[in-house]
Length: 429
Image 1 (cartoon, rainbow, N blue to C red):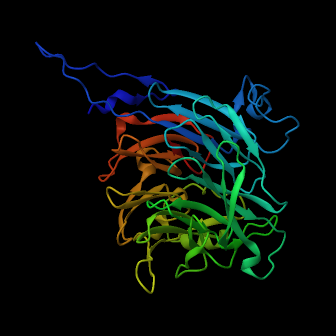
Image 2 (cartoon, rainbow, N blue to C red; image 1 turned 180 degrees about the vertical axis):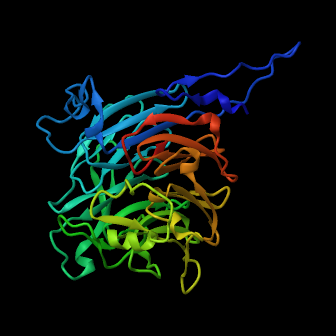
Image 3 (tube, rainbow, N blue to C red; image 1 turned 90 degrees about the vertical axis):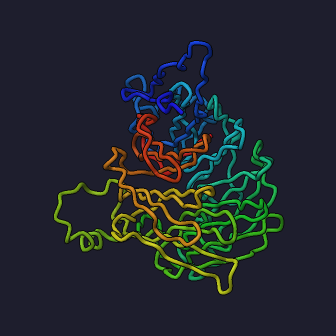
């Protein structure tokens, strides 16, 4: 395979072709070309994007798809086509998080994060489709969604937003809704049996869905989560029946993201928020000069948190915590993906500029990759590439690298250099 065929240049996002096939004297030898991907990246900081000399968020052209009278938050989307290196951008009327693309393309669903809207759009043209809200004044988006295997339904996490903690976790349990992906009409509503549901994954059997529940409450204007009941719940999709409620051994941190394929392949990450004084105590022995953590935007900072691996096929359920030898490499776990072929869980640790590779069967740390040494800072998104060979990792503010699955070698010839305007997750199709 000639990996230079999709080299992407640095000044913008510009595709550069390599040499053609090598011609023999009597025959043409075909090249095996990797399947190009399309990347979709939300840009949280659209206020820092400019267009025609003005802030992009004020552009009538970029806001042309907004519903009449809409004055809510907007998120910039960047679409990068690996086939020709082209980049396209649009503003969407949503306080957004992770984009979910239906298998085969044609439709993307975008769930808001603590916002009041969700929407669909065409992942090729970026044309807006349906726009919907949530049922009930206190319901907001949970940030993530997943399609059913046949693509006929989409499952979304939704949260309860309240002004104060009631003292009872059950009063704050969120829900999943099963919706028609074309119209966003709600078909079913099931409790997640957990506070502040966020990430979710459909099992390989297509019958069960696993949900990561923060288990926390944050007061209006506050930053420190009141952690009450972090858990991973598993529901039977047909009925909404609670099959398992798995609590981590460490219940002082939020359970935010997961990678789940079956009952003995359940991995989740614990995310811990702390005060500036706690970070100072943690780093007091570090003598080198380093920059302040740019991913901390308020009075709180991200402290180290482990990966937890559950095996729900045994009784009692086995729960194993795993952290790298240098625990500072495990700050702000962000995106996760399960590579079934290698039986590995791949996690980005944003504040640590690191990617962690964990054994799928045992949960142990196999490798920690310092991405800042490679030129990729604040890694956020991670997704398996459709070529079946690589996985992609995107930097929070800019750039996207490909790594080879199994060996985790960076493919230097297929880097993409583009400004992404800060995000959490990467979608790829």
